[in-house]
Length: 91
Image (cartoon, rainbow, N blue to C red):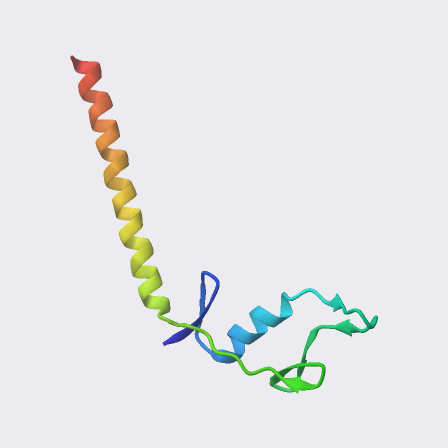
């Protein structure tokens, strides 16, 4: 099982955390301090406090299979439309 961030599935927790926290924009709080997550070793921290989070589980294989299923459905629709167009032209 992998870890899901948005629509992407990552195989390891470290990859999921790196993707999520490296894309967070820094913010300046009301005290004028810069607040942003930073990686210290293998851990992500916010203002010196370790970030503890959880991600929904996912399966990269299942996502591929879902994509194949959706692709075949679209192919069937496209072939059907072409078939109807050919039949209409013949009549």
